[in-house]
Figure 1 (cartoon, rainbow, N blue to C red):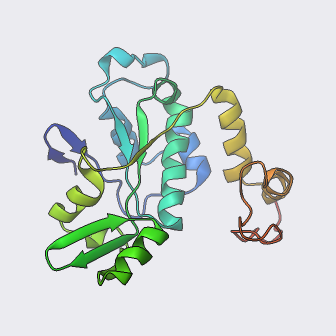
Figure 2: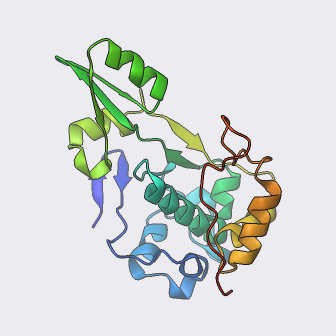
Amino acid sequence: SVWRCNPSVCSPPRNGTSTEYSFCRDWPRLPEEIQNLLKILGCGVGEKFNIKNLRYDKIIFMADADADGGHINCLLTTLFLYHLPQLIESGKVYCAMPPLYRLTKGKDRVFTSDDKLMNSYSKKGYEVQRIKGLGEQNAEELWDSTMNPETRTLVQLTCDNIDDIIELYDILMGSSSKNRRSFITEHARQYRMVNEDSEDEWVFHLEADSAD
């Protein structure tokens, strides 16, 4: 289904859609719902691509503000890297940044992902609620927290060399855990993958070795 909220179009991927990296790369293997998602944009894919036919000024990925949501954004980025890289190069693709916390005191309501701000409001008597996901918010709250152009936070996806980015995605999200582990070990500090409070602690767990 497509939810129309003029002048935007919100198109939700079907529940259960494969989250395998290879499915995002190979057009024939893409589920019909995902192919339709790309067709909605109107600009075509591959040799048929024409940015003049793009129906929207911004394409915004909107997923939960947790590890699963981050993975969904990575997979959606993969789709566009392989099938519509021109839109990334043209600065048309964004990620929404949903808040982690809902702070309420009477009729006053604040959304934030900043722990320091959250603690500051907590000391002022605001009730702090951790937002589990976009699905738990009603339409009004979702608009206020994530979709309102006046208040939302967007991160624009940009790159200097699309081929280099695709090569990086092949390493980080491909089937070879050995290549992924080697890259992370070598480049962790360059990409700020270490805990800022302790140089010896990772902010994530390196996956266990497995057969490639």
